[in-house]
Length: 314
Image 1 (spheres, helix red, strand yellow):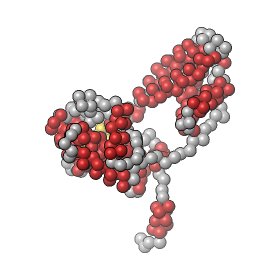
Image 2 (image 1 turned 120 degrees about the vertical axis):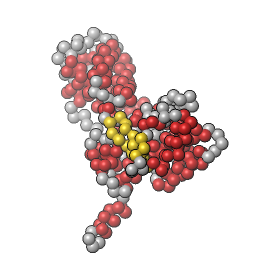
Image 3 (image 1 turned 90 degrees about the vertical axis):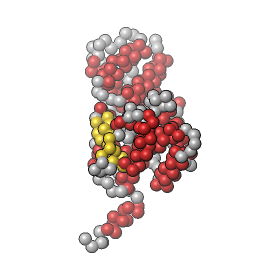
Image 4 (image 1 turned 135 degrees about the vertical axis):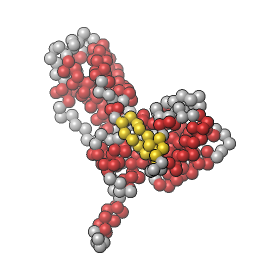
């Protein structure tokens, strides 16, 4: 494909569209593709100020650093991890241009020596006390006179996140019929499709969600969405965030978000010394090293207990 038409904005958009078509063929999630699109659109908007002065062939490391500096100035929340993500997306974008342009333009040298050190922070999660507060609160709400089915739905959503570690995108398409009861092990088994269209089973203790599932099944049927709106549609991600944050707030827990329950699931398993490989497979991580990186942190108490155990008779 011809590198340039002489219009930097039009050229960047042409290559962006071709690149995103390539990305879609790699089975990335729609959410990931939208993130890529947003980053590239921001880069194109930045390039607009050079319209008529520079072309796509003039983009270099100085140009790239100017864009990143502009993002840092615009937002205090532009962290090292955000910067790393931007560089990763732009690097793969310009690598695509390098590999597919007819002018032999090479952009890969722009990214040499550009390494960002990312501080790995422990993922936020609920404490055992906060978990108890949330569970007690949703039980009280289920018994209230108003919005009974909505409260039952909220309880099922909260418990499913908490006891399965599902990602938001994995939970959104589920319906009541997707919860398969395993009588022998007294668990509900769910087949979910994760990142890269990889399927895995997750399991939930039947005693925790039997009541919610039974009531929703009886009143709405097996095809009813778990993440349902009042009319039976599927709630969108932003509204689901609001719903779950409201659950936390009414329980007196000063935390927000959806992924926090996935982190809580993982941290609880780690604290119970569950094998990291098992945790990794339950979470749907591509590699156990990802699980270890974010969740395999220990406490000083655990370290001391480990040493003490060496002195106990076997």
